[in-house]
Image (cartoon, rainbow over all chains, first blue to last red):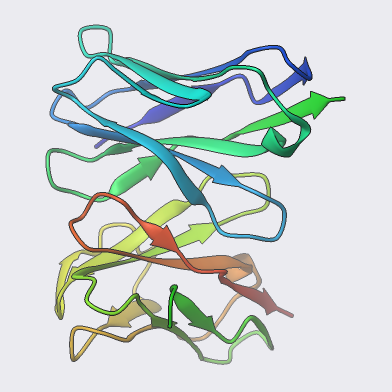
Length: 112
Length: 112
């Protein structure tokens, strides 16, 4: 089955700097890769997603890149703000139509 | 309602008791997922439904766990003869298309 590895587990940046979180997956049939943000006491919330027929997608300060050959994808947050502080999870769909398998999360801290 | 609703928000039970966790998905969402999330970890897949049909239950830890969605809307996750290791946050999510998952606030289960 699908296995998703996520790094780093914690990341601390200064406000205004960029943050990058990386994930790898194992199932070459996976075709959908979302990123979720989880704030304390809340459920995960989708922030951006990408399908396997696209190499990059951007939404304001957030971008995701996908390298299908290497089976890895990354989340890039530019001009970080204190409200970006949260736990971020990557996920990959098992096969082409299955459930999502999540990484273990990255705790991002943005220091003012 | 506007989002995925889970009840109860907290459940404390004694070892050996049965518990039933309820999920009310976003109206019209075809797919419904159950995940379990330990503290500091990513959501761990349990099972999912398309309409009333259970598509994949490979994530259920053992036969004490079961789920149903009899009318293709509300779902119940039942844990029989609870054990302390069952203590966790149980999260439900729904999706219109099997991609963008919307998570509920979860049920925090504590087995004493």
